[in-house]
Image 1: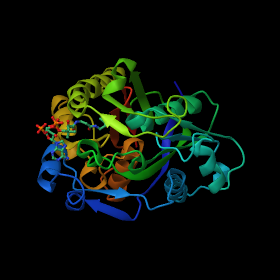
Image 2 (image 1 turned 30 degrees about the vertical axis):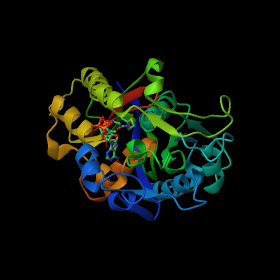
Image 3 (image 1 turned 180 degrees about the horizontal axis):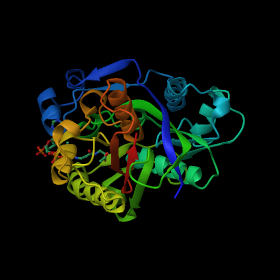
Image 4 (image 1 turned 90 degrees about the vertical axis):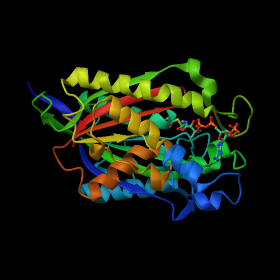
Length: 325
Ligand code: ACO
């Protein structure tokens, strides 16, 4: 049976030039490199320059993905951009990127699922492609979390960073088996009962301000491993695969302890786990495409490899997608 699959045609990413080390943070809040590394695995994060917005980071990532694919804006039908830190309340940051890359056709919209945004965006783009509504979709995760952090709150300001990553998904015929290239399955979940554990205390309709990120870190940690392993097991069940069958595990980069515990529970060998949280911190919706780009560019992820992506974040939202590269 022939089936349309959403295959990865190109990938790119962009990080702001400025890095902030744990040592630098320890000069402004009561923390230490040792504490941050031990609890999270984070050693540094990138922070956008004054005036450098989410759409600017996203545009750089999009241009890199287009170059990697050998395509131009004219070849793209749709942009889906995952972010919780848009340039403006409206219009959508995706339309700013659309304009910046010179695309004046098709549709562009933002999607908000916090740290799970990229997985939700891939799943959304996949639905447009497999139904024939779009042939090529530019999927972007881009964030400037530095703008919503309370830089006096050591419990949160040490965790996050800025950046952007993008992939181009393209329709291709497959045989309908797990040997096909492309998105093989995606599973999305959310549960609004957990809102107060991770949220931003502002917004246009509530406070008319942007607000700051607030988190009960221990509570988030408690739920994270169970939620992501559940939704990965859904992907395994849907595709007849397991932890051993994976070539690469590219989780949302929030915390190395969450990643290690999830991989262990799923029987995924540690040398198959892509880790960038040490260099990037938690870049929310950007973390997975940033990590994918690192592992593609350094030669680890190759065409035909079986790659599991997963994330969990505010809402809570969580999800997984199994992709044959
Ligand atoms: N430096 C030094 N001490 C700190 C810091 C810091 N940066 N932050 C908190 N502490 C202190 C606390 O004040 C507390 O001190 P006390 O015992 O005197 O009260 C102590 O460290 C322990 O605090 P906890 O919050 O209980 O520390 P915990 O071991 O839970 O680690 C952490 C905190 C790293 C945030 C952890 O809970 C975590 O990683 N949670 C997951 C959160 C996460 O990844 N969120 C990302 C968004 S969601 C997602 O992407 C999955």
